[in-house]
Image 1 (cartoon, rainbow, N blue to C red):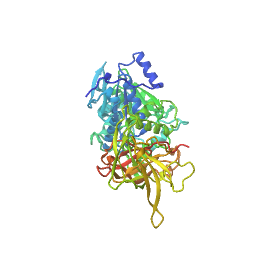
Image 2: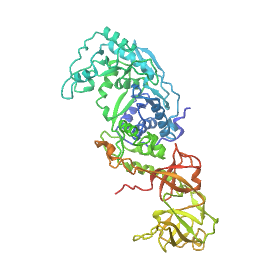
Image 3: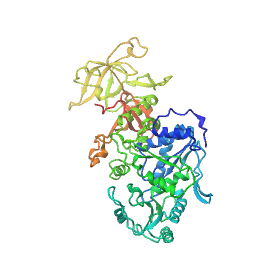
Image 4: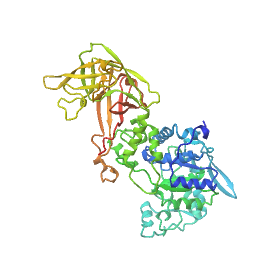
Amino acid sequence: MTVENNAAPAPAAPTDFIRDIVAGHIAEKRYAGIVTRFPPEPNGYLHIGHAKSICLNFGIALENGGRCNLRMDDTNPTKEDVEYVDSIIADVRWLISGWADAHLGFKAKSATTETRTIDGRTDYYAAPAAPGTLAVEPFFASDYFDALHACAVELIKRGKAYVCDLSPADTDAYRGSPDTPGKDSPFRTRSIEESLALFERMRAGEFPNGARSLRAKIDMASSNIWLRDPLLYRIRHADHHQTGVKWRIYPLYDFAHCLSDYFEGITHSICTLEFVDHRALYDWILEALDLPRPLPHQYEFAKLNLGYTLVSKRKLLQLVQERIVSGWDDPRMPTLSGLRRRGVPAAAVRDFAYHIGITKFDSLTDVAVFEHAIRENLNATAQRRLGVLHPIKIVLTNLAPGEVIECDATNNPQDENPTTRKVALTREVFIESDDFAEVPPPKYFRLKPGGEVRLKYACIIKLDEIVKDASGAITELRCTADLTTRPGGANVEKKVKGTIHWVSASHCVDAEVRLYDRLFTVPEPVAQEDFTKFINPRSLEVITAKLEASLGDALPGQVFQLERTGYFTPDAKNSRPGKPVFNRTITLKDTWAK
């Protein structure tokens, strides 16, 4: 399916140095169209940091009527898995749904690599989608393994690559250091013919892992270590999730990435700052092959560093492997699947990631900025419901057993035309335990001995008696309901200072509720020697709550505001109709603020 670019108005685009570069190239008509890409390695789940890159790359394509490809950088089969491929596709679909797809459309995977001859030279390329489309079925770097191999052979023929027999340890030792020049491999002068023959034997699987490698022949004295005869191919006797047993050699990232960009017609290859020093190699490989122009170019920006959060795949994997969390989609994780399971809307993630700012310097973003975006979105969209997390029973003594008084409750006061639903007021109701104080502190305006509060949507009640068991524990509070203070009643205008929420004891459901909070207690856990020591012991509290009866059949993906409490969603894995399990998405207010 393809959707025209004019299907909906383009979003108000942010401004930053990369967009300024793109605007300049459009003005000078450097490219026929703007093409970007998002190229994750399928060795883990996408996280909030990736959302910044997704929104930047898809956003630039969206703003300029171009296209953006989702491409799996799957050149290391020992670390990659189909599970990660599937999760990445699901996360990208979720994040851009209703945003980029409305402008860019969908396309079936069509990354077929072909060859053509231009001016006597062979050009390897992928037939991409037309401008204005989005590759939701992903491209794979492995789609280009034949073409990448042919490019490697071409570099050998041009005398710009050679097969090296140094071990991995010796290769590192020969490379030198930033302050010390490297020294030439003894195999650097190997003949073209011998390197071609050995490279073919490497491909055939004749040598063990690490026995040989293919290296570019650049400059072992370069001040840029990445130009000191970098590895292009290494031997890996490993099956690949896409190509199976076909290959026993696999390209390095720096070799595959720039050429994959070229094959797909990428114009602006946008990476994070750690790839600044790699840019020279990116350009060298493309220039060394003398490929027809235009060539892609790499640009770098600062990745997202979010307070109280980790965005290192290695450390996130450690959390999973050590069972500190329940999995990659644990709602405390910063993964997109974890955020989705927690009930964070894709639109809130996009609003945050799209406008967070693109710079050339690293900084720490306060997690409160992200949390504000979540609250802003949910306040406008979430339906209101009643729920009591820590219940204490109230008996309204002037209501008869079995009596039901219907009250109108507002679904969402933020709607342009708010609607209402019926909630039942009965003789027995539950309120929050901290909405009652037997010995109240000063200026306490909730329920207290002899005091009055309003049950929201219902009426004012007065506490008459506290009932305790033999051990002195409170079992119930006996109150009188002033039904004349109901909406439409004679004394509806009567004022009290406290209004509290409640649920009917006979018209509610018991639900497991998981109260999630920030996973770490320090703003920069990544800076700690052992970040696991700073796990928040209160990052998860499991309780049994009393919820409005209508929530018994709530579905995953729906997010509700439990009034005065927070935002909650049914858990996608564990919730069942009639036996709901709810995750707290976020509190109504920032409880971490000083």
